[in-house]
Image (cartoon, rainbow, N blue to C red; front, side, top):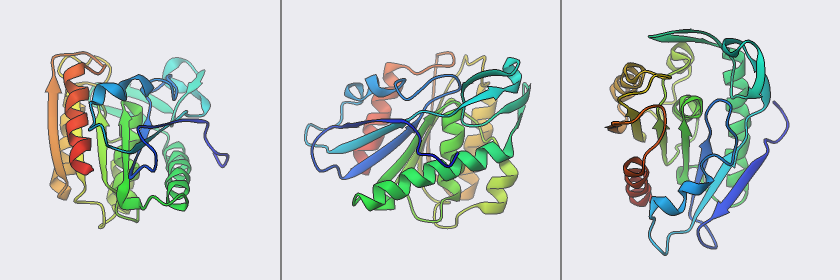
Amino acid sequence: MTQTLPLIERETAPAPTLTVIWLHGLGADGNDFVPIIPELKLPADAAVRFIFPTAPQIPVTINGGYVMPAWYDILSLDGASRQVDDAGIRATREAIRALIAREQARGTPAERIVLAGFSQGGAMAYTIGLTHPERLAGIIALSCYLPAPDLLRDELSETNRTLPVFAAHGRFDDIVPVALGEQARDSVAALGADLTWHDYGMPHSVCLEEIEAIGEWLTARL
C-alpha cells in the first residue's frame, strides 16, 4: 500500500484550521460519510477540511475471500474477538500516516488533525492515533474495537495516550457487539485518554443524535 489512497475532500470554508481524516467501514468507500458534513451542524465560520480516503480492494477471509475495500483482512470472528491481519493494519497505518504528512505539508500541524472512523475504520483510527509519534487533535471511534492490542501495547505513543476521544456504539449492534466497543473504551480510557462515551439504541450504523454529538465534540476542538 505504497500508492496514494484515492480520496474525497470537502472544505467547509477557505483556509481550513482543522482536518478530519475519516475512514469508512468494511466494504464501503470514501463516499460513505460525505453526506454527514452538514448534519454535524458546525459553526458557520468553522473552516474544516474533511478527507475521506477509500481502502484498497483486497480479499477478505471471513467473507469467503470476496474482494472488497478493506483496511485489513479479518481472518476469523468470535463473538468476543477478531483475528486480524497484522501486516495489513501496519500497511494501512503507513498509508494514513502519509495523509497526515500531506496535511502537514499543506500547513496543517499534526495537533490540528483528527482521525475518525466507523467500524473497521474506527478500529484503525484507534490504532493509528494511539501509536502516532506526533500529538494529534483527537480520535473519533464509532462502532468499533481494538483490532491489534499487542501492537498498541508495544507501540503506544506517550504523546497521544491522553488524546481526546469520542467513542460511540449501538446497543443493538449485531456486527460488532457493543461489548467489544466497551472493551476498547475501557482499555483506551485506562491509558489516560480524555474519552467521551455514547451508546445509542441502534444497530451497526450511525444515527442523527450521534452525528450531532460528534459535531459538538468537533466544535470543541476548534
